[in-house]
Image 1: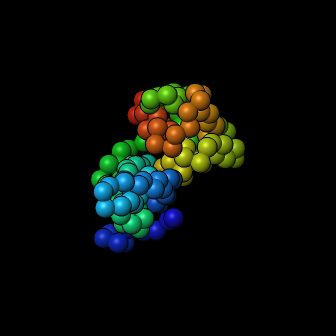
Image 2 (image 1 turned 120 degrees about the vertical axis):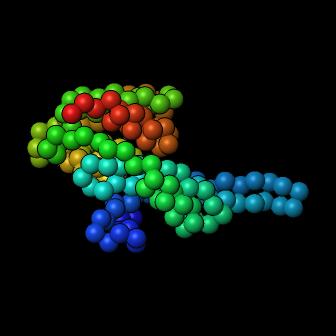
Length: 152
């Protein structure tokens, strides 16, 4: 899902919905359904952010996630169309390995890491999830942890 920001037409944002989770809470009155959406937002050049939006409707959860992700954007350094050096990121049981690639290689990554790289503007990178867990939330947090340790 790509769109541009409504408030500032000069700066379009790349918005990707990675995961939508349906949650049911059973109460005395019946079942209450809610949704949470994991969203990644980037400007396509050097900034990206992620957030989880929660609401009773899917569209509202996505909208809330996009709004929070825009506030949580962090700068990510790039070297041409790749990254400068190898990176490891870890969150929970997930460990992510990111390796720079030659121009023309493309983004070789899982869907979560691919979405982050597209939002940042990285076009050539090799990645691998090294641990057993592939929980989308933890993969995104581990990837941002790896980008945090990136040196210019």
